[in-house]
Length: 116
Length: 114
Image 1: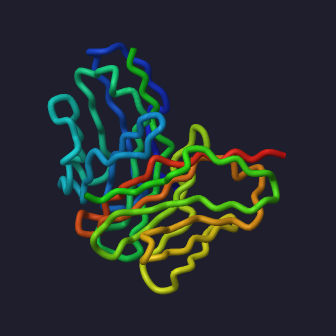
Image 2: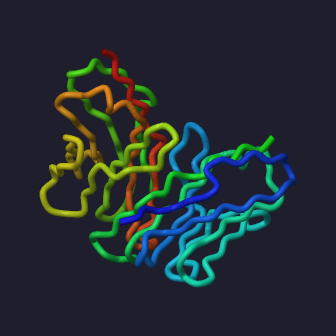
């Protein structure tokens, strides 16, 4: 079974530029998560989708971050304009569905963003 | 507010020695608890999880964890550490009423010396 795919793996941009990350979840997984992991910290949830609907985006900085999952499969996370403090690893995860006791999130390898 | 505390930022153990990584959580309801491992440049891999039932759970790679409700703890253990276990370990609590959202601790970096 293929895992969660993310691209690119690394990205370096200057502040005020824009950047986009792509995630393709495990086939059949209805729920998709984007996490931000700043160096020295644990991952923090940015946004969660159930199919193509947003379940939780309470910690997404909506003035600069946006995300979509138009067809309920793959997803794109965008930052525009980027700030220095956005330097982090962006992790995508997927799970079968919400509310099942067997729910387990499977993580992709992440995209390491450096903003200079 | 829900939170997870991993008191040890770094731990160094000798190969073959036993290991215990501490995790304490703050959560009002019955928690779903997880331990993940992250090797450099890799994503997170699930080691084990606790949902209910037996408070001692077994995971992959010889790891186990014990849920202690009275201490709000979910410590990870391994009887004999291998050099390949060197990585960063994250404890997380799953918030079922918030769509299974995971709240992570800050992580513990494990170093293994030969």
